[in-house]
Image (cartoon, rainbow over all chains, first blue to last red):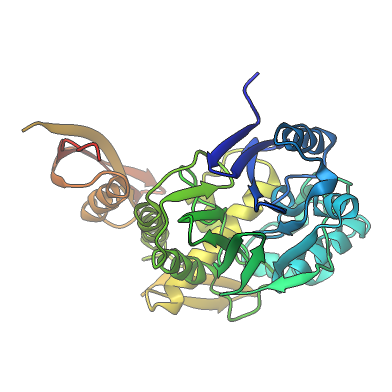
Length: 333
Length: 70
């Protein structure tokens, strides 16, 4: 069986943890700070993932309980889902951005709600053309919501923000705030080592979901934030890029520019569709992402990713928004 | 010098030119130096007696560059 832990830089270990969904693996990073240990991201709180963490920690001579510091790139289940268990066992000082801690708390709250849908989001779905009436509330939720697989810390020991430096032993973890995929997403940079732990921000083969959700607020422009964050990371000199999914790589500037181009092309495709014919985000998503039979959760994500592109185009003056019969339509200018 | 040619189909709701541009832009995300596109075929998708989409099949050509190992 292939090893689940690889030393990718002296004292920096990549650990491959299993996920029950695609992508099927998340990479978390264990850092020997010479006198202390830090972990960046946690995996999910499943027996398989926790077992893999325990086994791999032992391969470098420590127990899970020996961990000193935990740093999260963002609150999503594959990144922060096991933080509650890990902190309760290790008492590791836990760091996450304030916006992400609030979202983790809200995910737990939604998980505890009954089968009735989140009432405040129904008008949002409807106005963007999503056929919410056809889908039950349970079908709109990821399968793990409300289960023990998501066991996040909601009151971290320290909120982190752009420019913070977390000193652990002889290591310095710099926080680079990279909103887009999540509003409080952070990249963790080890300047001396020229190592960048990028979470989901700079994946080598796939691009992370960027969407506008009901709680985003009217001024939200997550795609604009994401593109700015892709430009921002290019100001840092890194030689080794450690992503949460996919293999380690070297040229983050090249990849960041590719990701920017990818979204520009996708936006062009969407604007092509609404040039002569105003449409809702849902209608455009059905054409760009395909209308074939898919889990409704994916259809929702496609709709809200489309909305992020169309809103970005509107803010940059390439599209306009038309409100008609309680529907929001977009049209190319 | 060696050039490589790939086949793409661009689809636009507006025009043949837009269909070509969308295909070239998308290919350009991962392929650098596309220098020519030859239109192989043009077709239209029709719905209710109206053109719904232009489908343009093209062959796009780019120079194969040697990469130096650093």
